[in-house]
Image (cartoon, rainbow over all chains, first blue to last red; front, side, top):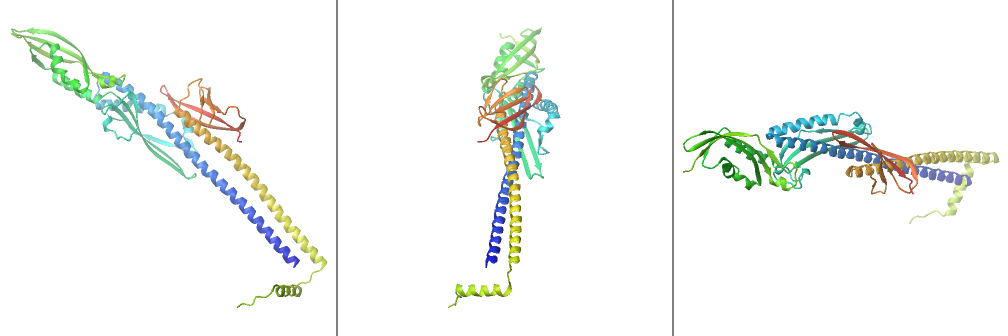
Length: 282
Length: 147
C-alpha cells in the first residue's frame, strides 16, 4: 500500500512538473511569438516611414523643378508640349543626381531587403483635370483655381521580405500647382499674335487706340490684363492714309494669380510685327 | 439495481493481491527508496535546468523587448521630426516627452529630461533635400529607464 502511494505521488509530482514546465514553455513561446510579430510590425513601420520620407523629398524635388521651369516658360512663352518636355528633362536629371548617392543604399535597407520605388514622368495639366481626391501642394499663390497649372507624378513603392513574411506595396500621386492659368493665357496670347502677325490692319483709329479697343478689349472678362509696348514707325504716306510698321511687345497678366499673391502671374509673349494703315478721317 | 462492493471488501481484496504477489524485505525497501531518491533527483535536476533555461530565455526576451520598445519610440520620434523640420539651435519636445536637439550638422540627439537613462540607444534616419542635394540626418534616441 505504502509503495503504491509512493508511485502515485511520484507520478503526480512528475505530472505537475511536466505541466509546470509545459506552461512555462508555452508562455515563453507565446512571448517570443508576440515579440516576433512586433518586430514585423516595426519593420513595416520603418518601410512606411521610408516611403513617407521619400514622398516628402520627391515632392521637394518636383516643386523646385516645377517652379523654376514654369518661371522660365512664362518668360519664354513655351507651348504646352515644350513646357512638359523641359520639366521632364530637368526633373529626371535632378532625380538622377539626387538618388545616386551610395549612402542612401543603407537608408533603404530594412532587414536586409531594400525598399524600391519607381517614379513616372511628370504630366502637366490644369487643376480641373485632376481627381478631387488627389492631395496637392500649392507652390505659388494662396488659392487654387480650376485653371491653375499643376505637375503630377506617380510614385510606386515596393518591399517584399519573404524570409520575414512581410510585404508592402503603395502607390502615391504627387501634385504641385501654381495659381497661374498658363494654358488659358497662352491660348489668348497666341490668338492675338495670329490676328496681327505679318498682317496689314486698316483702321481710322491710331495704332495705340486700336490695340486698346480692338485687340485687348475682350480679355478682361477672363480676368486677364494686358501690359503692352507698341512701337510704330511711319513708312509711307498716301493721300488719305498713313502706313506704319509696328512692333508689339506684350504680356498677359493673370489677375487671379496676382490677387492670390503668386510670384508667377504673367506670360511674356514674343514680339509681333505687323503693318498698320491708318485712314485719315475727313 | 447494481450491487456496489463496499470499501472494506475492496481493500481486503487488494491487500490479498499484494501479499500474494510480492514479498518485501528490508533490503528491497532500501532499494525502493534509492530508486525513488534517484528519480526525484533526476526530476529535480531536470526541473531546475528547465527553470534556469527559462529564466535565461525570459531575460533575453525581456531585454530584446526593451530594445524593441526603444526602436518603436525612435520610429515615432523620426516621424514627428519628419513632419516638423528642426531648425538649427532649436529643440523639439516630442509627444512622448523626449527633448531633441541638433548635436552636429548631421545628427539629432533625443533624451528624456530629468530621468535616469538606460544604456539602450536606438538609431533611425531621415532624408532631407536641401539646395539640390540629398542629406541624411541620423537620429539617436537614448531611452529612459523603465519604471
